[in-house]
Length: 437
Ligand code: GLV
Ligand code: MN
Ligand code: MN
Image (cartoon, rainbow, N blue to C red; front, top):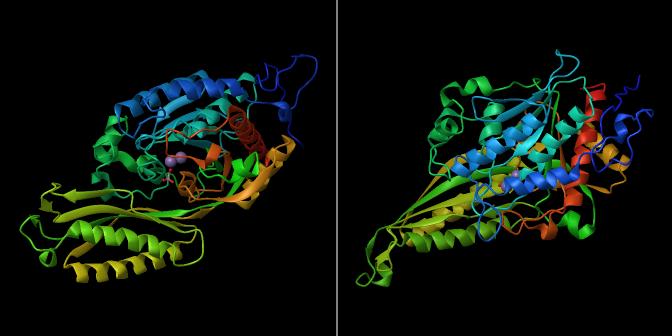
């Protein structure tokens, strides 16, 4: 039987015309309040605000803690029962009709990269809260319990979701995050308990499904004037710290042919990464995004360089193939420059396809809302890729104007965000009624 929950409260503003208590409105007429999402995005952007626009709200910073407090307040307003898990993820729960059912989860993150924008993660997190609020205001009780989740430290390497899915390893807790705190101290700072991380962990089959709404962060939807992206898969991402050991010496007295210049070797390495990533067809990408030369003075030949290497692709084997090629290049550079390279793997996020059945429900929801769609891969990493280890996942993209992201210039239009939130709302409702969940 088709399940019908009737709206006896006010519909969200985007869908509200007249409220007629005599006409029974079905779930399909529910709409989120888009203005409220925009207002909440604007309020959240105050935490860690930068003069040039955007925010620096890196995980475990004071701004992150304040932003999290704000989001928890919104969850309470949405009548969610709010708690932190031991990893520091924020979970807002709404009971379903059937307590034995596994939770239907949806959410994102609110931490940012340094000098980031106001949309990456925030759109999905605040829209998820809005979806829960819309259901509460309209007295819709789902069969499944709902859990809105805001994962901690997505930008630093998907720490919250990897703790949740059980992939986070004890030794990673000593890694120093962008905030300057170790992951261990950071988790304590935001109210988690790193000694009891196992309690945050869920097993495969513990969730009914996970949905994530996110800005595209690329320029496909905007340039092709498409409303909604339906994600087919999320790239795998691997990070390494690369130490290059040379020899620090006097920059004035050491002849050019007697140097062991670690920074020069680093420069050649950066070129080799770019050349390797572009040496084969495909969408793979390779980046050196951080470099530190020591001791760091104009009159000293750099004796040590620490840089990052990042590789991404939808295929884990391809990442490995590229990595081996880069190692070969590094060996040759080391030999020619009399330096030593050392690679330390610091973060692994496995590629994940989304669930075909969930994709179909996203397509169906968008179609009913008269929105145009496109199936597309995600070149950015997302917490959804770890959630894919626990159950079926789906991702909804909305356009990023000009494809700009991880930048203060990041922007998504309010109407696109509202569309995305409505697709999220209706996909949640469809999943709740799907026989296979
Ligand atoms: C996350 O934003 C990533 O793709 O780095
Ligand atoms: Mn993100
Ligand atoms: Mn990001």
